Each structure stands twice: as C-alpha cells, then as structure tokens.
Length: 125
Image (cartoon, rainbow, N blue to C red; front, side, top):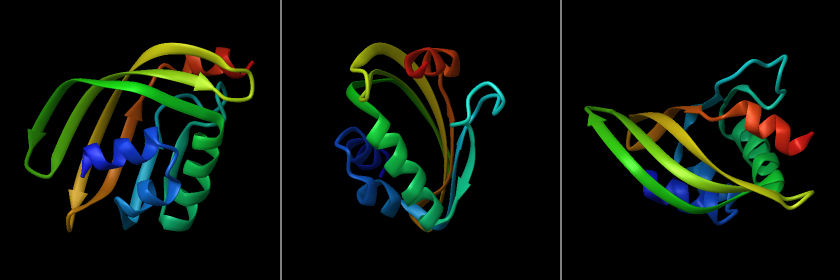
C-alpha cells in the first residue's frame, strides 16, 4: 500500500494517491503554518484530493529512495530521500522525508509527514 501510494505521488496520480487513504483519512505536513502556508492537516477524500492536486501541480518528486522502514502493528515509519522539483521555476533539490503512517481497514487513516519546510519555503520564494 505504501509503495503504491508513493508511486502514485511520484507519478503525479492524484486520484491514485487519494484512493490509498481511508475515507476519513488525514494527511498532516508538519511545520509552522505562519512560516509556510502548505503545512497543516487535511482530512477526508474531497479535501485530500484538492490538497494533493495542488502539491502534485507544484512539486514533482523523482528518484525516491527508501532508506529505512519500521513496522509496528498498524503503524509504519518510512525514511526516504527524494529529488523535489518546484514546477513553476524548475528549481530542484534533494531532501529527506520522514512519513509516519497509521492504517485502518487496509487504507491509510493517518499520514504525518516531516519534511524540510525551510527548504520548501526557499524553493517557492
């Protein structure tokens, strides 16, 4: 499920990414909302579809490399490295991301993502 959701995200497939989530699923990009408006929690398929569509339109992910995985029951932590391209300017850089997943009924019910929000802010500035 996780590799499929990463493939959807990396391939620009918004609908494929949304369907990996439980209907009540939530995605949180951790960070200071005052410093970067993209941070915060989005919940439910309609909200996730809109948010992921905006993320995919703005940021391309390429060459994802999973560095570590840890599974504990219905929770999975994934540490990965990915090349990120800000589509409007073409600016690209490599970064590491930590994703904390929780599953229910075979779907992602919660995804908390820790990314370098200062790096993201610099890309879009």
